[in-house]
Image 1 (cartoon, rainbow, N blue to C red):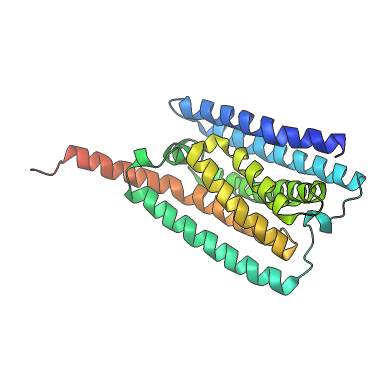
Image 2: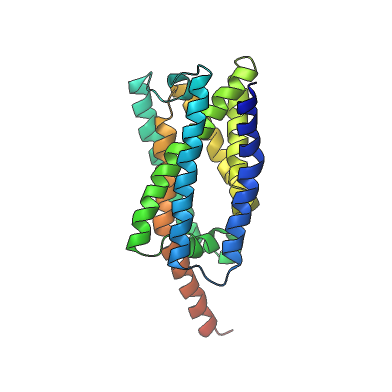
Length: 244
């Protein structure tokens, strides 16, 4: 393996999970998050993701890896279109069901999602516009980094074993979301497996990128209202307990 690829993998496997968890945990520990803090988080994440993707694209090209080899192509248009529609529909339904559960089940059983919804996700129109750019950036760049670069690299070093690329990509993708806690890590690992299989099947990043965008945008736009509704119901129940 080339030394620069090894350094990139080390950074993705160790630095990204630990730094991301520390930053988000600092935000969650604060009594409240200001609009300026959320916008700064969005802007810095957008900048980092594009810089990381550009560096990886540059080094991959320097070592002779083509755009198609990184999934930046559509070798099977009909298959990719059909899979894209199916995957986006599946992810959208799954998100809606999960958000409904968020609104109806006790918040203490929902892990970190309620805190993320109120402190990290957008709370007004301006924040939603910037979050739209963030969701698009994360979908494009993370899928390129993990499903394009990491998956291709581990396939190569394993002698063309597709399963090795799928497992490595999903594992590193899951740990990149360590800040979401154990539940979030497991969930993103499972999603990563699905996206990696789709990328291997279609030879393209298009379907995972579209589905990733829909997943993040749906959660970011709908989760805050669901959590506030759940909090309101909990407060109402506490103020008006059911008589025995």
